[in-house]
Image (cartoon, rainbow, N blue to C red; front, side, top):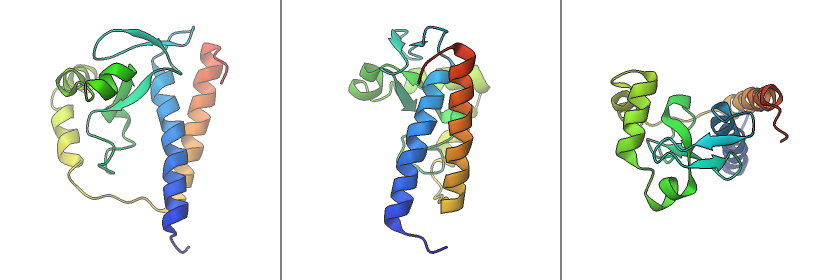
Length: 139
């Protein structure tokens, strides 16, 4: 398959939408509310962000579930992701040293094939729909 920059960018955007929905839904309550992992504010999942510890420009960690968590818009944008608080959350949730591992991993170039994008899109579509159904949340 010939790789098209336009099609790859489009696939990346589609995957980003499904992945972000998954991150925001995975820890929301049955009413659809999340607690921002950095400040503790309660927000509806549709108003929340999928905050990246290692910024999304680093392709090796952009779609890594451990690298992303639910944040309020203020922490994610105005406070630049609250890196130190996010780091503490990652190590507490996934084990000491995970944040360092993600920082290291993010330094390396990584590129998915269009087929890998399509597989991940389908994977996260299924996960999002399953989570929404389990929690009684309408998409």
